[in-house]
Length: 171
Ligand SMILES: [Zn+2]
Image 1 (tube, rainbow, N blue to C red):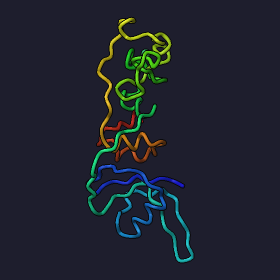
Image 2: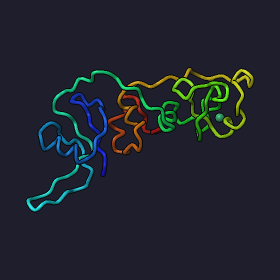
Image 3: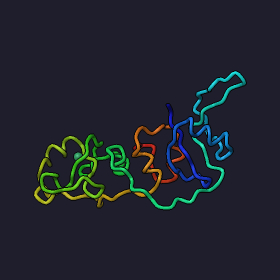
Image 4: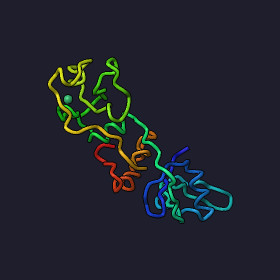
């Protein structure tokens, strides 16, 4: 079962549904296929393409913003795929305040880091090492980030997520 990206009528990314569910939305005239997945379903009476991206025909007001799930992938994307300490390509995540010292597993305390910095830092607080963060880690806002955090992101979705802050270079 493949997944389909759902955009609001305004093109703002809303979420992800199964491609079968997306096809039903299109057949019921509730959405329009923006991009095909290339997968074709064959019937006795014809054939249908499963969508990769659909756009709702009517604008849907989002009642509230869900929190963005914390994942390694989303942390890397937020931090530009770089180690926050030395700017080398990131290979791991690090808890700024070590968990052993009461640091939380949350957006404000988890950053991307390279293997070397992670190893050197180990259980030490930043102060002890004389290290500093370039900027304070924060939770990113918006549906594009939520979608990135839900798992494998289809590369052909990225042009629809990029205008909302998710970068192709890091996703
Ligand atoms: Zn580093």
